[in-house]
Every structure is written in structure tokens, then in C-alpha cells.
Image (cartoon, rainbow, N blue to C red; front, side):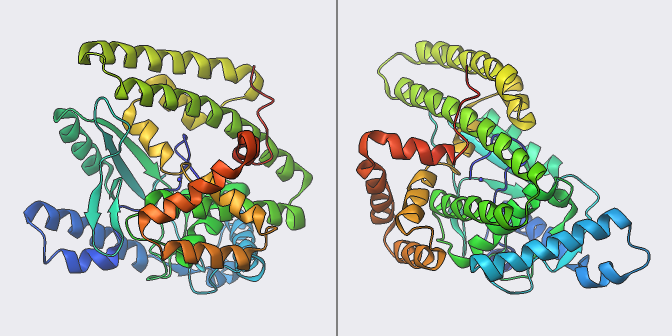
Length: 380
């Protein structure tokens, strides 16, 4: 999730419902229960859909909701017309779930590693999270994993994609977050319908985030008010500073966990590094402002699972943005190139993307891409 330190991150649901129905007949008892909640939760959501056109013309529709849905329709049309994203029934209907998130994803990582635990499912392959429609069920799994020695993180998810197998609706869970987030969400989720490699979360998420960012820049250039453009610039600036901070600490954690230090010393050093991260993040706030979800997680309980969840959405993003720039931001050419990469074995696919970063002289181009035009001037 682009990777997101805040609760607004847009992670995939842990199981594609189409796969869940098949897999339920193949799994053990615990797996049947998991797939059952995935099927039930998604079908309940599908049954609640109301066409946006119908809501726009219904006298009973709240005026603010009508305005927001009309804006969603315009953004949805832009996505297919200008970005070449799938033109289908997705995001042409609306559901108010009456809760802040559609699912809750559980992430886990060993006590002394940033390697996220994975779960393997049909169709979508192995993914580094497990999603639940019920928060209590997600917290139960997290508690069980902690009892096994894992660091865990439970993150609320405003949106997910069924990769075009269903006509996914617009949800109140992301509509409530404002115009910029709505546009990002639609571009991101539709990109997953365009290219998706089962079992390769970093590739899938980084590609969708690259499309999301480029799409938002294009949309703002054509339709964004000066206020929205300023808000986006401020968000990108904060994100760039936070990204740089986390990357620097991630490198320190990786070095620590790979070292030959005794376990007790690694644990002490881990605690010291997380304390340093909290202090460094506090230093960003006066100049940068605060990304609410980031601040909450950094201040409350940063751990390996949280850091691992963020990396899933950023690991290959600079390479995708370099690739897009190398094609002069010609999206059809970029999509064809990405489809070609998707056909490669995972090791070759990742090697090809990493070679783009290696070719960026001195890393300067990579840093510019990570900043996504926002820079890190708000850092002290």
C-alpha cells in the first residue's frame, strides 16, 4: 500500500472471494472458517450495492453525498478515458457499511526479522497479510501469533480489489476521506485489474501506486482546484520526509538482525532503535505537520510487522516510477512493459526492476522519484 504508514493505506483483502469459495472445500477446519467469513463478508457487501446513477437521481439522497458521488463518477470516467484503466462496472455503485473500514489485515514478522509472514491462497497466490471482515477475528489471530513470538500489526483497510472478478463498489470507508484519497483509491484499485501477479505483493502494490501517483498528478492538472493542488503538495512533502526517515531506520534494523550479536543484545538494540525512530519522528512534526496514522503507530507500538507492512508498498515503487519516466509517462507503453515483466519468473522480474535503480547514477534519480515531486524540505 504505494506504502502507507497511516491507517489510510489501501491494502488488498487477504483472500479473493472467488478463490475462497473453491478453497473452502479443500481446506482444513480452521481454513474453512476463514474462507467462510471471506465469502460471507464479501457477498454481504455485494448485496448492499446501489447504482450511483440511481442515488444521484433519488430525492432522498443527502445533498453532500450526491455531490461526492457525482465527483466519484467524474474521477471514474477520467480513469478509463485518460489513464487507460479498465472501463467496466467497478466503482459504479455505492455501499455504506456503517463502519470505518471494510476489512482488517493482520501482518506478522519474527521478533528479529523484517521478513513478513505469508499465507498462501488460490488465485492470488501467497500474500503477506490475512484479512478479516470482523475486527475481533483479526485481533484474535494477531494475539495467537504474538503468543508464538511474532511481532504483529492489525491495520484497517478502506478499500480492496477483487481484480475485476466482481463489480467492486465505492465504499463509505474511503469516500469519507476526501477527494484526493478517493482519486488515489480508484486509480490504484483499477490498476490492479490491469496487471496482477499472484504471489508478488511488492510488484503488484508498487505498480498500482505508480499508476495512482501519475494518475493523480494528471487529474489535478486538469480538474484540481488550487486548494486541492496545495493539499496534495503538502501531503507529498510529508510523505517524502516520513519515507526517508523510515528507510534510514529500516536499513539499521536489517543490519542489526543480520549481525552476529547475541539475541539479548539484539533485543536491546531493537528497543533502542524503535525509541530513536519515535524521537526522530517527533522532530519532523513542527516543520512537516503530522500524518495522523503514522504518528499514532510510531508513538504507540512500532514493531517489525508494521515496518514490514510498509515495505510491501514501497520496495519496488522507485523502479516503476523510473520505468514510467523512461517512457516519457506514456501510459500505454508503460502498461505493455509492465505486462512483459509480469510474465517473467519472480526473480527475473525483480532483478529487472532493481537494475533500473542501479542504473540511476549516484542514486540521485532514485531519491527524486521517491520524493515524487514533494521533496523533503520539511525535514529539520
